[in-house]
Length: 113
Length: 114
Image (cartoon, rainbow over all chains, first blue to last red; front, side):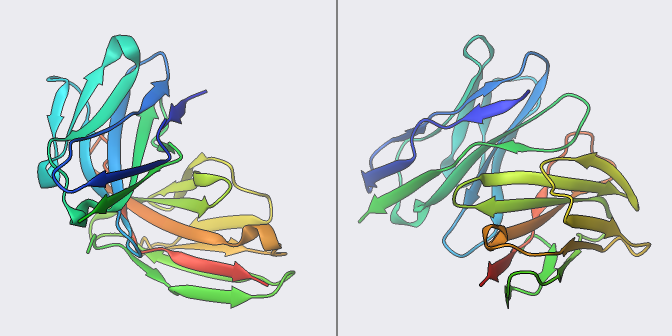
């Protein structure tokens, strides 16, 4: 069965600090990988996605993620966070014949001004 | 704004009751997905419909059911409600022509069972 692990449950950073959120998945076949963000009181929004090709994926708002197949990882990065990045971040995987997304447990990021 | 709408925004009801949550997908999207977000279970896939037909099922309880209508809106019916059903219920839709399953999420319905 597919699963997604997000290692950091809560992260607190100061503005301008660099961010890396870990995501590991378990699935042996071809996967599609996603990072979604949920700002306080809002719906999930897609940050970036990986389907194939260049394993370094650039998303919106300066976020990027790197797919490392050998490590089953898809970590999210941002070189310099802003207070407005305070949100919950979800890694998700779609694999196999179904279209359902399997989400990780989420990482709450708090950026202090 | 993702283009996916959900009503109502909030719903407060009592145990044993039945409620219906409504979702309208983005214009042109044929697939609708339902997810439940709770503190203890996280974000869990419940069910998917594609053009009126059930396509995939996840961790959906037998007390829950869904359908997608000819105009493509979908309803999630929750019956014999229990305290543990309190959660945020999200609907998402995806384009018919995309095999990559980029899903667009609605604002959610917050269900509180007292």
